Length: 114
Length: 114
Image 1 (cartoon, rainbow over the protein chains, first blue to last red):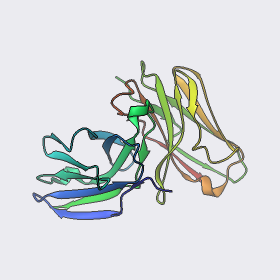
Image 2: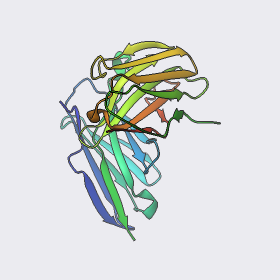
Image 3: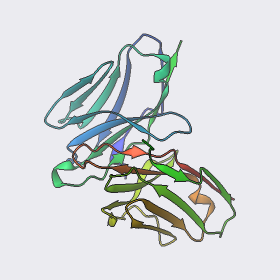
Image 4: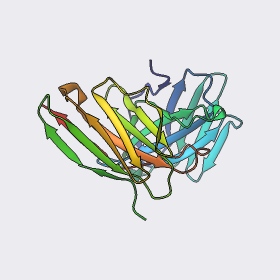
């Protein structure tokens, strides 16, 4: 049972345009959400996070939006750059219960077209 | 600073053989995680330790899998006997702050069981 779902395995976007990656979750205990970025032959690296008390968090070109009622979050990258081509994983954790276990989605492969 | 170090980077073995994957977490980190990445299920948590003590091993597939953390600077994941369906990339990650949810991943160990 996938508690964190990324329904788009891949996404292609023109350089300079906006990239929007989506993630849905089913566990209402999740209260902290993260995005990780992974290049080939490397481990995932932390990108940005958001707590359930917020609905938006911004860091430079990256913004994460959280819609708790819909159990949905999205990552926006503006403007997209060739170096953003990677696999992006959404992750969630029930931090309120002191559990640091991260549940990941299956990932979305983003390709930025020059 | 050295990141999380995993060995071997690649392992090819035959069905029935024992496989041992090794991990050295970042110095000072008190939590260590073993994840497995497959195309179908993304990143799955196998087990995690806090202060060298196993906290959650509910993701360990079956008795063929075992993990140990004898001290703060070393952990092993063992598969005995190995099967072709165990073929995957195994990641080790560590963290120091259970409040951020941010994990630092190693580069992974790619296992192929023939």
